[in-house]
Image 1 (cartoon, chains in turn green, blue):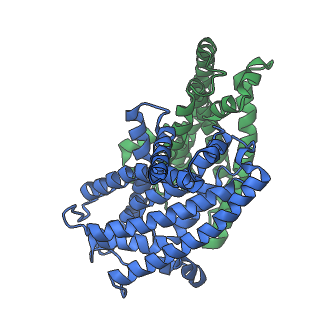
Image 2 (tube, rainbow over the protein chains, first blue to last red):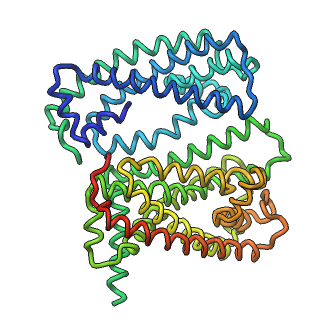
Image 3 (tube, rainbow over the protein chains, first blue to last red):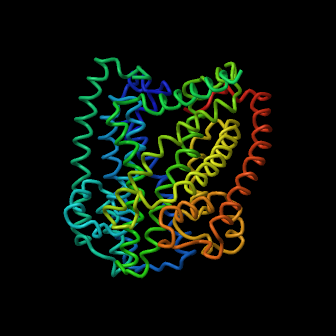
Length: 193
Length: 281
């Protein structure tokens, strides 16, 4: 999501968005909804396949809360992506490289492959700015009791929910500001800057 | 006559380096080049710590893991980033056809491009090993490394990585949207190369398949060269010479097979117009 406008500029579609009778936020929102659907499908497939292959069992009563937390996390992540898209709108090739370069650090900090509590409270707190960190920790706790705990899962879900309007507000402000700057500096159509 | 291939090769290396690095300032590029392999290594190290709970009896495996993941940067750059680079040359910068028109043979151009990718991975390897030595207390000393063994093993491995990557990228030219396939192939190799676990833990048919890969023997030799006897070994019954012979044989096989496939893919690309085909970039 963050690098979307950068790709669109390279493909020549960003200028079409700019003259369309709608806003950049609306376009990104539509893309986010489509992408959320495919992401959810992929996540469900991996979860089912992985569970069957490795014999993982879950707490039945945790499934619904986990689904709710998953949707909240996804929404917060896409809002963060929209916020970053505003920054990336202004940068060209740097955006592409930075988004790929940030992938592994985000995987590391968010505790994707291990409980985030292993990173300690300070690093964990800083990593909580990435909604995936708290969302994933909360989902693990409700589905797999006994998982090392970073925060109470209800508090984690609440914090993720709070991040949604904050990131959305910042994304709107950022997109508006960066769009004006990009128009002024001709960055909406300059591919190789 | 020798000068033309050499000039072409060095030009291709410089071109590859320029495309890889000229999008930003040097400092940001250095951070970008280091942060990814460093994060990957940290992920595995924390996973290892969480799973083992800091048990001392599995420390040899930590060394196995760290050296495997650090040297993997060569394969990541050489296979995944290289194939993306060639697809970018074709689809984004639209200059692949000009490489074919230039007065040097295309394989030489591709080897030059691959060399620049492998060179940029070297810094990441050194940094990850340094961080592991200092941060995790691994007994790695630059004065006790068997450099001749390491150099020969790396030379053979780089030859096979280049052969594989060049062939793969030529095959990928047939696709309009082949962008992620290089990464996918690198991930498949990751599982079958003994980078993060010994190939003996794979199911028997897969372990047999993995034993044909030169990467397995290369990583075994890098571990032996850096931490001889103080690291988990995949082939404890084989001597260094025997592992080296297997690496040489597997490299020869990769190069021969790669050449055959490359020749076929190159013919197809010229015949069907893949070299300047519009693609999704």
